[in-house]
Length: 266
Image (cartoon, rainbow, N blue to C red):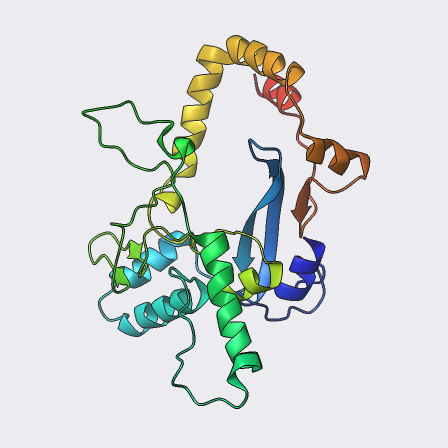
């Protein structure tokens, strides 16, 4: 992860000169490491780009009819950064010296095989774990389906929501350069519009406050019970014993002890 941050994101440390990386000039990042059901470790990371607009500003720009250039530039950036289909194999009729072993041909084949192996979704029992059965439609939990195809990228003139071009509904979105460098499955999403960016802070806080007041004691008992019986995978144990990080961040934060904070407010 440190190599990914330093070499691909081109982020050295806070306070130094910023450099343009794979995704652009990174202003900040925060990533958490967690274990899958099978125990393998993976990282979820949020990345903030220098000069990027917040979701509300992006929505306002999209909804303004005179901002056509902005919409076109944004969609071009997203299409260039996020791949939604398996790269095609190089055409056999292209004349390249020593085509079989030429770097261009080898890299194209490698990109095709790597994306096909790592990014193509295959339905399993996990996909249907929240399906209650007929008459409820059987939909993949990961929202991956061969019918989810969009030939071109669009912006909704009424809501400002961005629908990115998708030529294969069973492909996890990926960045070609990151996939080629890291050589493992990945997922990438632009959080600028749509359901991922619609939850307002005050709504989230109000919901949390209601839950805390009604279920505080029961939730604490449940949490303590689950934590005390939590099973750790071999990968997690090794990670802790070798003192590997469980999170990656570009900034430092002050610890907030929620129980004491809540008592102070009450």
